[in-house]
Length: 409
Length: 112
Image 1: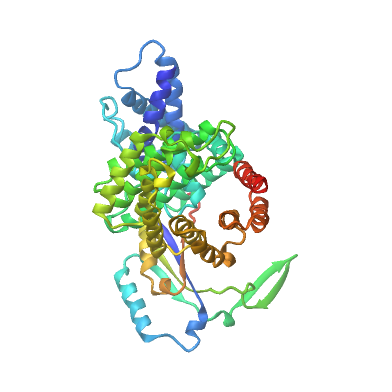
Image 2: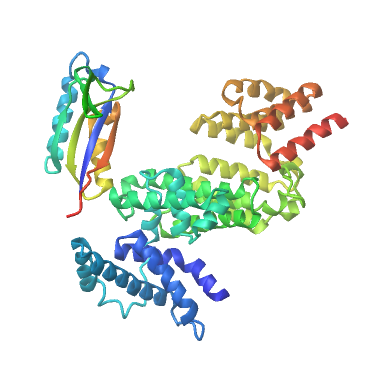
């Protein structure tokens, strides 16, 4: 049933978004759509319907009405009886000739990413409803037990129902604030897939693919273009373009400088660079645009030595202006060390001690600068400190190699 | 759907009385949302509060709320709203939101 799987991937979110809109309930809609897909396994064995989307939508609606009737018969609850009536009058007559399924995914994504829901629930709900990932798949991707994800989903859906979070696209003045939450969710999904943590590489790759797919979808659905959304897409495409080059045959992390640049996905780089360009032209220039521009500068260098560190340094400075965080300051220092040498950067790194002392990358960066300055003994101690602070296997192996190389010299 | 909008602020701000400008803002808020507001009050300072508990059938009375927090419940509105977004919109217009925070709580309805 390869074909049905493809239909599932492509259509789940879209059909579910329409069902939630029609039924006003996440759970009933989700259950009904799942049942419709189960029916499809049998019913499509002979012949696939002409319009699979409409078939699934109509079948799911029938199933939902059955469920609601059944519940009403058992419980005789007034509200459910009313819902049944409502369904019969508003909904049933149009059902047979349904060939178009309304696309309500924009409503769905804004509801899943409502700021009244906790961030981890926003992520789980988006992956479950829009991307059609199962609870087990989400748990697997985030290296969490399935019951934890299941609980997050239940709580989020309860809050949507009980607090009456509306199923709608926010009004124009609220769009920037709300879109920034949606973008944060999408980027979190991407980073979870991209981070060099342990876990099933295929599942993690799927998270990156879904994040990119969601962003493309958002761009298509939003009434007007948003520069930061273009920039976010660019940023993810540019990072993802290095996927094959950044992990070695035994799963070890390969630094940007050491990657085989011919393995980069150049079609993706071209698309990313074009998007960065248009995002800068359109403005306003936000943090995603700056980060994407930095990624684009790395991508444009055919060899690591040709990287335009001066511009990258300037961009980090600009990013710091928008977002004064010690991590951005650390990145600025690294760029400065590449543009002007390690001695220019070391004092900047030292100055961040109080805020980044517990962060392994602060120690790793400092160790690297010390090594480049020939202060090997200090570098060794500092690499060791970085090693003590990270649990991540890939990062540990990388730091261990650095430490070993130091004593070889 | 009804929501309770609970206004939390550092009550030290009112130790010397209410700011008349701010009172005007509250009046204006009340007028703008007159139809939606079902009730509301400002509360006297927590120094006037009493806490009552019953344990093993015995009533225990103590002064004040227990926890030492930076913000205290200083007032509330009970409002009627179509959905959470509308309630959030109203909460954001309460002057106290600029100094402290407003908690938006849906009112529980027990099945008919």
